[in-house]
Amino acid sequence: MSHIDSRLTTDVDRAVKVLRDGGLVGLPTETVYGLAADARQAGAVARIFACKQRPPDHPLIVHIHRPAQIAQWAREVPAAAWLLAETFWPGPLTLVLPRLPDVPDGVTGGLDTVALRVPAHPLARELLARFGGGLAAPSANRHGRVSPTTAQHVWSELGDAVDLLLDGGPCRVGIESTIVDFADGGIRVLRPGAITADDLQRVTGIVPSTRAGSGVRAPGAMTSHYAPSAKVVLVAAADALAEVATWRERGARAGLLCACRPDGLPTGVPWLSLGVATARQAQQLYARLRQADELGLDILVAVPPTDTGLGVALRDRLLRAAGRGDGRVFVQGTPPPDPQD
Ligand code: AMP
Ligand code: MG
Image (cartoon, rainbow, N blue to C red):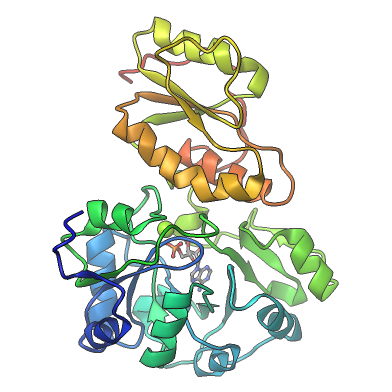
């Protein structure tokens, strides 16, 4: 990163001006870095889609400063949604609600709903407070690729495209927000995140359902997403060394992503440490996926965490990084195809 590039800054007033002028700002949030534009300016929102090469019918999350601003975007707010907003905002939770008619179609992908979140990062809060309106801000990466968790990540991927990049340091949560909607009086988790199903139930008394079968048209709901260039192969811990060996025999450059370095990992095979605590794993996951590409790996053998708490969201991201977001196939049991495939 060029430190003399004046577009890299912590100057919130400059960011407000860029946004008012219809520009794009790289925005730190506690989840991942966003690519922010004024959600009310159709031209600015269109620039987000062009910059990310994102399919135009995929909706964006509108970031607001305070829960009371929900009323500027949503026409109906179920009691459970208010409860969740009051409990978890500012924080990594996105609420999908019926939209008001004046919400731009570019933001909602033409859907009758709008997704809203109040982020917690101090720079994002300051920016939203001074800006006053809503900011459409998907993750600041090219569509389908790994989300950025540092300003450096944004710079290397979209540095040419942003008008300004607010540097807020590494993201505290590290994976995207939990997204919920309120279909049929219930709560449905469209994307798992740091606010877990247990958290949602504890606050509302409602047992959430999961996304399966929702048919929502959304990138986070695609089977392949968050993907590095290296092919990601998921295995159980007990099979990790054998999987690495199989790929190496085929001439592929393989690395291993897991919590603890296993005894017997051959020297020369990069071990990408995920850390042991799930909160730490979430912080590190995307930097590790990027590291796999920096190391020029063909194959990243990964051992996903257990399926509880924050582990649910981590597994979701790893499954999608492996192009297996349908969740049906988890452990690679069959012999791998040729790495050139
Ligand atoms: P991103 O900002 O790239 O992490 O993606 C935004 C995500 O928000 C999408 O992947 C959708 O899952 C979700 N989303 C945004 N708006 C809506 C909506 N109106 N209905 C359902 N999901 C939405
Ligand atoms: Mg994204």
